Length: 492
Image (cartoon, rainbow, N blue to C red):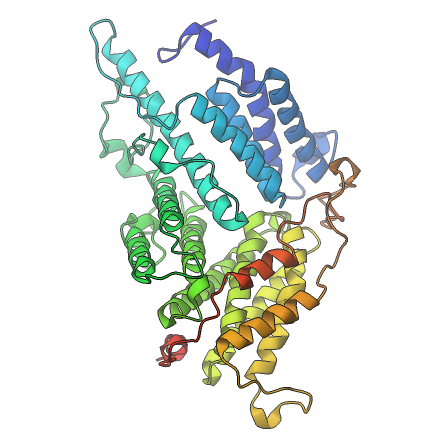
């Protein structure tokens, strides 16, 4: 076997052994994004989601057959792509377990530890440079695993599998991997990078944000009974600074659009990075929206901006993309938070009410279109519709409210408890419990018929999940509302 300069023959043999498992996952993930009508579907033994699922399952079975942990970088990549495939199907818990397997294998390979590459007398310069860039490539895989672990823990409420204190590896350099690593001197500013965007910039931003997730958990800044609010303020300022430090081609505001025609994914990438930051902001401030006006304002602004971004995503999305995790979850998450704040702290301005109403209406419309192919949209739609009705009642003027309406004079904490009890008594399931065996799924035709049957996917984001979001809010007596909460929504 012909070797490469940065791997021994034995190491290359191990990587090649696991390569078919990775290839199956690449095919499976690619099929999740192939549009309807492409000729590729006529050449596959199965249609749509079934073909994609078959390839992913084959890759997973092959990886198990070859052995986990597989001491090969390719094995880590295969599990990581499998996790991504599962996430796109809405199978959050399975995705979390699979990325956990990838992380454990990566730790066996010591990707979490810094490895210094130095020129020695028995290595030529070309081999040393190749080794350096190979380590850079491994770092890029590691930070992606780190980001997934951090954000899945934050979203799912699961423990993190990576302890930041155990990691001493440095982040990768903010430059593209050179075409010929054996001749490229390591430097952050490379002449060839001036002709295209640096691909690692977005992952580095996500990594910095994920480090803040660890800090948030370590300081318990997202705890509902926080005694020192300055921790929240400090974290908020730090993540806003991260956004300010983004390179111009990744900024949502005043973006450098020079490369947009050549790299058509960039506009959507800017929106995605903003949504990730907003997701953190909402998680940080959600527990404090009653006890602190600053948190109310930050959470509301982040949620509304997320809905604006999601509206753009949906307008540009094909029907084949409706099943993707982010299409539904981020919409439900932000809409639910906007509804809660509007119910607990209703605006008096007509313009503010109109803004909230339109945002929630658009979210419900988008989720309604997605519900047949997205289990998260389906499970979130019922509770969001219920909250929207509560918002509309809250927005009614007292003199035009129905006779059956009970006017509440309680504190926001009282209103929160009422909302928790009300939501807990409702039944929002529009389909049976999704806990059956995956082998029973009738996935006959994703393409041509976008309906997703009552899938075998554990419904992680069900009524209990959103109830837990309410229970995370500390129902202390509110500070006095100065009016700044809604002012920014309708000020000229």
